[in-house]
Length: 181
Image (cartoon, rainbow, N blue to C red):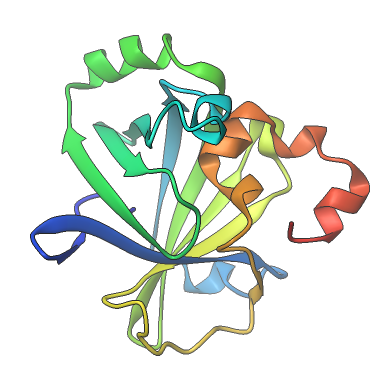
């Protein structure tokens, strides 16, 4: 979820988001803003997979802002999501408590055909991976897919940041990088 944006359904924070692998560099000329992010998780994918937890808890520092985020565990385009600003010093302390590795990425904002696309260019242990996300007002919203939005990975849990913190892209086998799931 992007900073300061959330769509609401039935008075509950619901994120409706689709994810795509990014092809080439055609999107770079359309970047309007970029922000460096560090984020980590206070839980593990094992706890989510074992049904020991029904939500992930994320700490994120985006530029000078910091947030605590709680997101329901299911993969797919629609999940509950709640995000709260916290002091940057608290976020730094919480990042030190996170399980697994930290996510290091730059988020680029690109508008295309009336929608904001957030393109995450990963660094560190996830370098080489670039994923574009689009948040939608409804599950059946129609949108124009830009030429640089390649294969959809919305239903592939390993492309979610939570999974990338536990098993980074650098640890994937070459054949894993070629298939979605």
